Amino acid sequence: MKYSILFSAVVLALGVSACEKATVVTPAVVTVPGPAGPTGATGSTGSVGSTGSTGATGSTGGTGATGDRGKTGGDTVVVVPAAAPAR
Image (cartoon, rainbow, N blue to C red):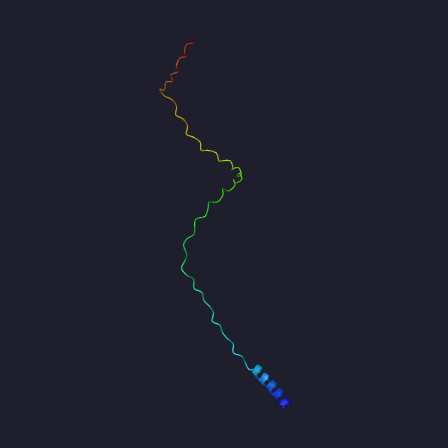
């Protein structure tokens, strides 16, 4: 009798452990975003940047266009005022 209870317990343990256990599936939680919140405050003004380096010297410009030849004078009279008297 002693061996039959022990044998039954071992058979029962093996039988229970051989069964496939059901897998519990937990449903996934899907979070849905809510409405947008209020706009935040405006940030402070940033600091002034440093002065940039001096640029390279530019190339020399091209020669300008030649002007028209002047007209010869005709009846033009040039009046030169007399020198002021010394005081």
